[in-house]
Amino acid sequence: MNKNRTYLIIIILVFLIPFLAAYFILQSGVNKTMDTSNYGELIEPPINTNNYQITGSSNSLNINKLDKKWTILYFNNNESCDDICKNDIYLLKQIHIALNKDINRVQRAYLTGNNKGSRKSFQTMHFLLENYPNLIRLEIINQNKNIITVLNKFTNTKKIFLVDPLGNIVLMWPSQFNGKQLLKDLKKLLKHSRVG
Image 1 (tube, rainbow, N blue to C red):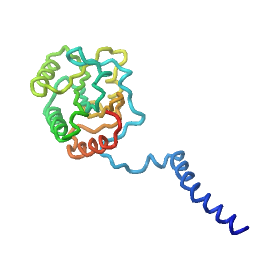
Image 2: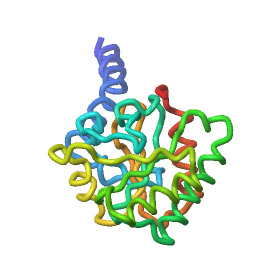
Image 3: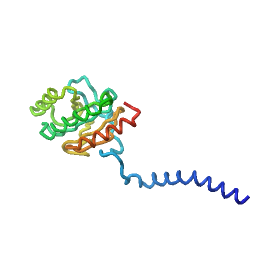
Image 4: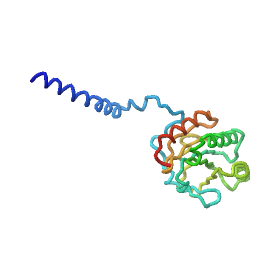
């Protein structure tokens, strides 16, 4: 009888110990200090873009209706697109092409936080339209609920953000990013994603 009880306790512990270890790791926050396999920085908690009013430069596109695709959002808080910005936009186009079969699941967008009526801003939007016609150009339409203020918490100049098909900003990379690393992150995410 004692031998049977010992076996029963061992069997229960074999199943119980992993659950207790997982619970401890989650509650203690140890998992937040563990390394991840992605190169981009995870945004926790994600920023829900559906809470902000942003429109496309043609006024026909709302950020809430970005075709329910993954969106690589290039955020530039300057009026003009300098050489770094132009290089980043070009690299994003190349990364988009390199997605091969997943190219239709991802789109690119450009968001600026400065006055759209200025001459530099107009020149930037014209440059983007002329050189990157498939790049979605987004502008702020309601200064009261300004996503620029939220994004400025992460950067005050340029940064690349990844928006999931549900409208959540989930990852970010710095300007002058490593294109191969960003591509690896995107491919891994698209491989495991069940949305978009």
